[in-house]
Image (cartoon, rainbow, N blue to C red; front, side, top):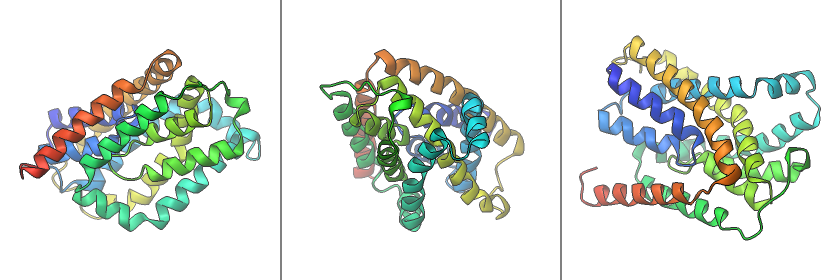
Length: 260
């Protein structure tokens, strides 16, 4: 991986982790395009470390509150949303890894993400719930949707925001809570994957390129979170839906013709 590939993959991860268009799906396409399939989970792990650093920087005050008050309401909401994600992820870990490895269904997953975004944005009654009005059931349902997003081209942020909107949570708050809930999800995935750091699969990935990719992931992830929260307060998800539909059709066409 040279510096230009590192730059592109880092920017891609940083933006797509928090935009509702699937970071894992885009990384799969990027690695395949650059011939970096052998880097696999090792490279993805380091790129996710970058976005983890970004979200830690943004939610540092909330995380300090969680640490200081482990049984406070915010902490319990975080736990209620994380538990179903962890159960789904650990139960179906092998299945998700196999699907991610082959990428056979990635085009259909992009199409499904677009459909979910379009439907959630078309809800007639906009939600009004603020952060202090989110219930534990709300958090549990959003966390369940997050668990389903372990499939490679199903957007984690897209599904969690959609679930929050379905639960009549205000758009800005939906994005805010979605990204806050990503902290244990990304951190847990990183911890589970760190074993690969010592497996020798880092061969062919220069340290300088890896550090550049991680730094770009952190920087653009920070920008994406800030931008997305503001966008949802007065914007729409339908543009993202159209984008992933187009991407899904392109991927399916390339797979059908044997090019991809």
